[in-house]
Amino acid sequence: MTSKGLFVAKPKKNASEWNTLANKVTIIRILFIPVFVVVILTNWPQWFFGNDPQLLRITQIIQPWIAMAIYAILALTDGLDGYLARSRNEVTTLGKFLDPIADKILVAAALIAFVELRDIPAWVALVIISREFIVSGLRMMAASEGIVIAAGKSGKIKTALTLVAIILFIIKRTELVMSLPKATYRLIYLGCWTVMTAALIMTIVSLFIYFAQARYLFGGKSDITAAREGIAKSIIERASEIGVHVATAESCTGGMIGQTLTSIPGSSQAYEGSIVSYSNSLKRKALGVDQGVLDEFSPVSEEVAKEMAEGVKGTVLRRFDENERIAVSTTGVAGPGADANGNPEGLVWIGISGCGETLAREFNFAGDRELIRAQATEAALKMLEERLLTL
Image (cartoon, rainbow, N blue to C red; front, side, top):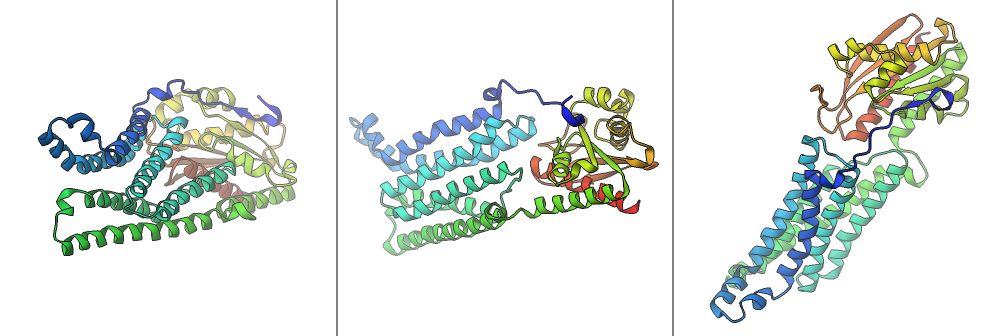
């Protein structure tokens, strides 16, 4: 137990992150990027088949097709490793770092190769690669503020267009295309640049959208953060006004409710503390949740949310009278994927107990892990605010 009644149950560190199947796929993708570069840029058929003119000729003809196949496979494995991580519950810190890095290196390698082959001007590669660095920087800045900037539709469209453009430019280099009549070749050439231009446009559009989403980093706060803090301020003011003391019991939100409340100046007048009970054992020991309830209804349930709220009210707020105590609790599945009991990702139960009543509400949130936690935090604050306003 730390100061101010805060219990924290830390998840175990996975020492075998390198051995997950999803991370192995990502690492293989990174290792094969140099292979793609060698295949598309060098005269490797001469190295192996220089003494066999017929075999040399065949490999030179299929060289661009091999490069295209390698690039397509590497690009498509981006979705594969993400699926494996979620379906096998193997999302790791290493994977979160390596996966986007692999994608950016692959795109950068292809664009730089085209510059070397004089298929595209350097500024095209510079625009697309620079956008990736800028977006990564914005996401890192946002993450430092506890906010996740999710990939939007514009970014996904940009990614798809860039993939198609790169494949088309590789196909354009094949002997099959280059031997076509000039008029036909020009149409294919125009098609390549049409898709690449669309990719450039969406690159710029998506960058502006990311800047709009992250505008709070440059002098303001995100809509989500501002909304949470506005509710928290209302809670502290109302609780202080009527002499009610507040406590929180958090599982899936991991202390975000308490963090938001304590960001308000003067919160110590009303907010007493929190028990962050991530594990079932701490739910039992610190909050008094009955093992039979956990077994029968699962940790993510109405019954457990109620017992968590009652437990923290009886522990952190035990020195106050019943009409001076109110507590809120969260238990849910932040993901990725369902939990061991089959509860779906995004399912959250929020309990509230105090002033003679205990109840819980079910919520189903969408988004990645951090977004689900942020939404659960806001919903819990709203429930707490609503209850206080009725007193």
